[in-house]
Image (cartoon, rainbow, N blue to C red):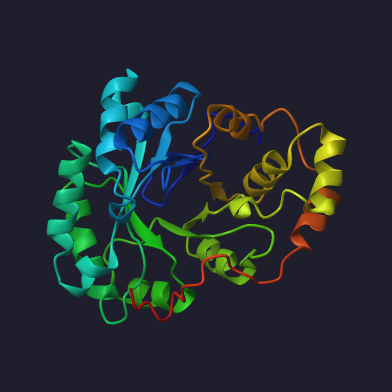
Length: 278
């Protein structure tokens, strides 16, 4: 399959999600600057915007959508349910507050941001209600290991469409990706650029130089060729554009193997998905 900026993934409920996203976490503490940066991403061709309550920028995402001139139905918007709202059993109220901050009638994808022990199934039941009401076109998970997904699949009426998880060459999560694929759950990557930790990596530099590309472009292309949906983030216009210019080259099978072999099962995020205490 030829990959382009318009390439989409068909989720297990039939809706289409753009295969390259734009992450909005920690763009700026200033909402106006965040709004302008998101507008730049939309102008650069991104149609998949990823936010969350805990990013404290849903208002900026909504304002960028209103300013950008792109019809709402051409954009794919994700937001997420935070842990404290699960503990306090206010999952539905939290979703309504996110919609209000975004200024939208619906989101395209709503995720459980982190699994809170003892609250995953109750939260999923609320997610199903939101989906049935047509206020989220798809629902899914983030930071979930297989046992959490399995517990949901045993009880759910509506299956998770996505699992968003940390993914870059030092944490390739092969068993989790295989499990998600076997259960028709799309695998989405946060920190696909490794938080800038690969810029001096000699293996990646050799591959990038041979293709006339940058290391971030190689990493994002590696994601796409693995069928993973990356959500890169940058607050700089030139890098926003750079990150989308990944469709005019293809990594060789040997390139892919070399990058795969960098795996150390080493996450950047130090939080344990099986022991969420925040």
